[in-house]
Image 1 (cartoon, rainbow, N blue to C red):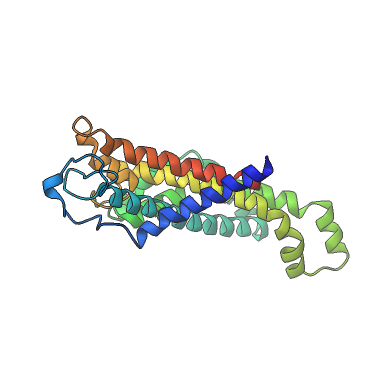
Image 2: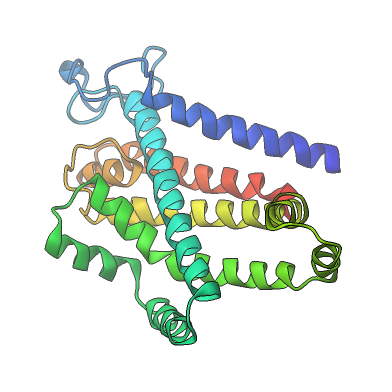
Amino acid sequence: MSRLTTIFEYASWGALCLSLTGLLYTPYNPMEQDFRSLAFSSASSAHWFGIDGLGRDFGSRLWRGSGNTIAMALMALSLNFIIGLVLLSIEQRGPRVLQRIILLGIGVWVAVPVLLIGLVIMVFLKPSVVTLIIAVSLGNVPLVFRQLRILWIEQRNALYVLATETLGAGRRHLLLYTLWPNLRPDLMGLAKLILAISILELSGLAFLGLIGDPDFPELGAILKQNQSYLFRNPMLVAWPGLILSTLLFLVHLSKSRSY
């Protein structure tokens, strides 16, 4: 059973990496209207996913869109963890007043939806990919901060850590050789959870128009763009949703060894 689980995990990571290759290569240019005479054509041997309403190879747009979605989610995840770690460091080492302010702020922050954060950011920034990434990363900060704080306090006060510290281990040795090996599985599990949430939120906000350019190849934006073609060619709407669901399922499979 564990071997089968490992196979599924590596297969899921391979599929996610394959999606990212769409940033570098697609069979056709996903932005050029090279097949206008074939608009709304169904799947064929030359175009596996058909042609969209503007005469573009839909498979190339989906491939580029899935790569953009994952890349943007990884950027949001990185920014999210950086902010969470900075806040945790200040909360753990700062003065008591600052600790209380951070904990109170996180308690209020967790009740603010990502959509509201995105709308507030749009007051200062124009709708764009950057705006979308910032909104999603800020929206998940409370969840990341709380989980990081729980993990740190739990591991830092563990008996094996206290024993290692008592034996004279320095801070660097304590972090790299005592804490990190035990924190790593939980941190990877948390990162994959936030990645899945970020993918879903990014596509949702892109569907609502916060991505700015409606023609940008991202799964949520592609779904929105083809929404008006639902009754003319339902697969133009079905494929982005199916691929988005598949990406979330692949991230779920890749979490198996972290728990």
